[in-house]
Amino acid sequence: MTGHYSTEHVPGGAAQNTARVAQWVLSNHCTSMLGSVGCDTYSDKLRSEMVSAHVQTLYQEFPQQSTGICAAMVTRAERTLVTSLGASGALTLEFVVEQWERISAYDIFYFEGYVLNSSPSIVQKIIHYSHA
Image 1 (tube, rainbow, N blue to C red):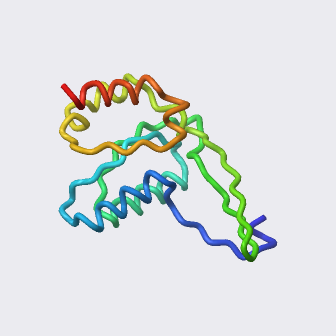
Image 2 (cartoon, rainbow, N blue to C red):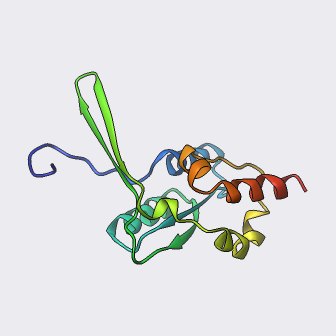
């Protein structure tokens, strides 16, 4: 596809773009991104973009999986998305527990739709302990 059409690569996704905008608005180095990635050029681009935006990252790495990607195809007023979740659906509760000291310090949590399906136990843990 990239050889036949004009393409633009934009690192992010709903949650990471939200974190970048929140950091831009708040401008006090207070946002973080929790997620999972492969060990590939896409994860390198994500990390670089988050560093540039001053967003801290807590990425669990899965070397045997690719980083999730989404292709947005736009023609005039029409748009369609094609997604490959890759490692993004592999975040484990064990990793969250290991990172809990950092995670528990946060005041606001934003969950994207995919994590509600792929990792409901993680969402439940964070919600439960954020009210403790």
